[in-house]
Length: 261
Length: 261
Image (cartoon, rainbow over all chains, first blue to last red; front, side, top):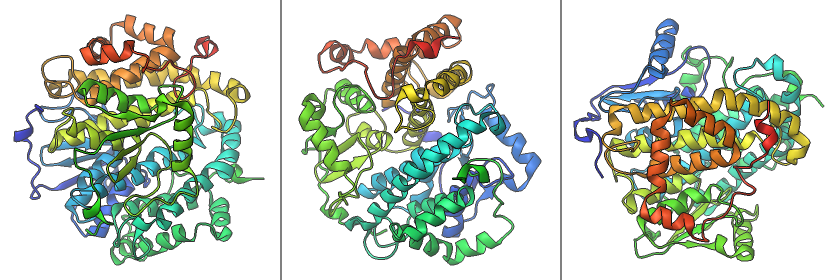
């Protein structure tokens, strides 16, 4: 396969890891932050500087940006820079980063199994939870699609949340989950961190429904994993720091009326 | 990293490639079929036998399936089997298959750039085009969410379709797209095949809107790529064979009322 300038792309581990994401809410950038925090690997996070972050994200996603000699343009943040390499799509970034920081195998079936678990969370649970408050159009305000949001949320709570929690529980019940509370193998991987953040966001957006899932006793493994990740020393320190941003806009929004009935 | 039984998983190229997907419509399985057809690599496709396919898919996605010694259970088809390895999620399957059949680099930046392009199509365009006919709940009939579908389609046609076509055109305009009509590098990759099928499905679901995009002259590269993939000898032969299924249920559905103003 011929690759564009592939030999010239510097991606050695000497280069800094740079996260480029919107400021003001955890969003999809949070999955990447948590992976670096757990690994104790330094990374830069422009979201810590609001004005700089907005300008940098906008310059990357501008329709005037046609990429550079090494990289096609990114569509949306999170965007990740490592040396000359620029990539986007959260699961692509994690596919790249996780093996480098010791949170995924470098080769073999685990590469694909972890990728599929994480994609099921991103491509499924995350998109659907976002669409509970934007079922008609991302360009409309929530207030202008509130009735549809209520209707969609009813089905999301009743059918989709249990489906995803049930699936994650099955992955935990599988032989491949091994010893310990982890999704895959005997030690923590980036998939566990992704599930932790997905559950945390779900707790914020749909607190009553998530509590009901917990009390049902059907998903004990999922909630046990959630606590186990939360208690990891590096993660715990991060969650208590001011680097952890409060929920606000973005994927996980708490509209109490979406949980009524 | 400890991986569950990873050393015992047989994934040598001697093992047959097995696609497990619903029968009766192209769906997400089609991306995988087209990659094998282009590569001229033999694969089995249970969808050719309707009853057998339904039974096999249902056994894999049953909530009683907790996977096996090598694999966590899959959530949904397409499911892919190679020796002892079982994976799901279309982009995960392509990440695994494409380098083996010569349609992606085995390592380096191209692995991630192709993955991100393909995910932008799957995670974005495909989910949104599906949701034009199911904006409220996947468990409801289209007829029971028709008004919301019309409303969502209006925004999809006006805002989202041009966004995705515009993005793909930018990837084609980037220096990384190299010589020829391809998205990345100088030769055809699986990303081109994915874009071909995504455009083909969009033409089926929203024929008038896709024609308007084509006539606008803003996305000539996308439509040129579409034709270039369609004319590949192996793809062309496949598209004319009875293995290529007609559009029906699934992601791409043609409801003329969704294109009316």
